[in-house]
Every structure is written in C-alpha cells, then in structure tokens.
Image (cartoon, rainbow, N blue to C red):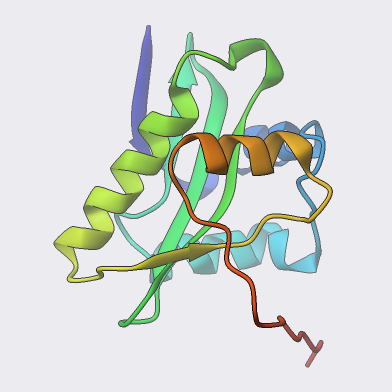
Length: 138
C-alpha cells in the first residue's frame, strides 16, 4: 500500500535515514529532530511523506513566510524513483500553499546536484539567476 500523508515528528528517524542516503541533499544542524519538529509545527498541513508498505520513501518540507512559499528536502529513495512520487509530493505541497494564499514558491538546489537540478527542470521550475544567497549562523 502506498500513500501521501502529512508528516509527523514520529517519522523523523526514517526521514533522516532517507535524507542521508540522497546524493546532493545537504544536511545541517537545521535538520535536528527539534528543528524539524518546530518546522512541521510552524507549517502545519504543509509537510508530507510518501509511504509504501509502511516505509517512508519520499518527503517534502513545505512552508511559507506569509508572502512566499519555500520547499526543502524533496527526496525520493533511489529504488522508488521514476514513479512520479516526487512530482506528487510537490503538487500536494503547492496546492496547500495556494490554499493559504501563497502564489509563488522558491526552493534551493545545490549547484552540483545533477539529479536534483534535472528533476526541477523536468517538472517546469525556472532556474533563477542574478542574485546571491548569503547565510550566517546566529
């Protein structure tokens, strides 16, 4: 049995193991259990997992700041790719963002993540240029 369902912090151990196995998906302290729990709670109804046979094989973290949507950690286990799981997760997240009045969404892909960049281009996302992202640990 397979289905998309809302993410819960109880899924954390399976999610982190999935994420660790995805080439090009960068993890940081922001991905700690406490931080993911805070993100899920702040963005209720926007984060999803794809489960097949009681195993999480896909994820999406979706949220917004009231103006723009953001997507993080769209991941599909390599053994389950090419089944439109990533696309289904993204469409679910975008629909939920639209329902909250968000009409534009951004995401970040590491420059040399060939699979990730290929996926986003294939599903119609436009690669932006002309600006830089600055980060600072606080």
